[in-house]
Image (cartoon, rainbow, N blue to C red):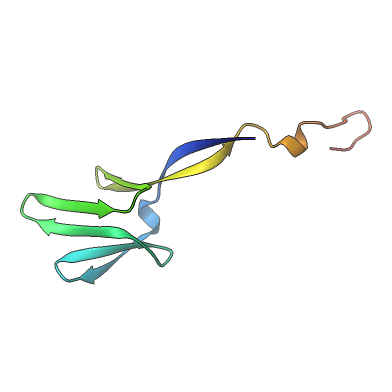
Length: 81
């Protein structure tokens, strides 16, 4: 089993709560950072492992790549896996 770092779009799961001069951002009740309101547009300050790009928010996560080892040694002739 190999772990691969993937960039996952989580924009639809992000919730914003109004704070003082900023919007506090959460994913599943976990704070991930905040967005500041500026004259030049919005500025994101996110925790490590998160990124904002072109009005989307991404999370970097390690996911398994390749086959899971428990399924690679199947015996198709005897019908077990």
